[in-house]
Length: 279
Image (tube, rainbow, N blue to C red; front, side, top):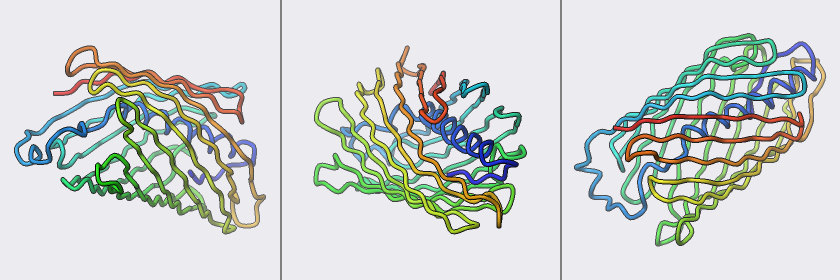
């Protein structure tokens, strides 16, 4: 949940939901492929060389009479099956506001399947980006064959005004036999001022052919509640969003992805296109 200070509840609601949707577009576009296959021996982590990837793309969205667009680029540096550094930057325009966002994240993996990660992001603009966000997450397999992974996460958001929020998340990823991956997530948000609470969650399914083709669909639903500033009106609404995506490797190291999103609250949605190169 992004907490932002706006001049009216309707404008703030538009900012918040569009920001969430476009951020989801960008994260999904840069994370279409898993870091490693399940069949890879953990011993390779000690002898695998560093790998790099660069990703760039464009996100377009339309809500009522408003048009939003973002350009983004991401650099990843990783030692497969061991760790990954990820650096991102974007230029975003929506709802008469514009700003630059930057972020960095680190993830550490162990042969047991356990992982931990942490990240930080910040951005400019009047309200398009929060002052800063800090997130941490951890996960581990809960079945003997490591096909089902449980993850826990925490996100702290500080807005440009007096608003801030804490979010706690729980997620499951299930690598079903064959090429199917099922996922679900839920999050509880506590926002200030006003000590308001809200719940959100989602489901997704992916058909994956390792380092070749990925396609899938997802559904997200949530109740949003926050107070603009101390003594100002409380904003509350529910929203649902749907997405479909497709990613294809053109060569062993070059590929592209496309994702479509639709949000019921605006009767509109967006398109994200991405090109990635690995070496």
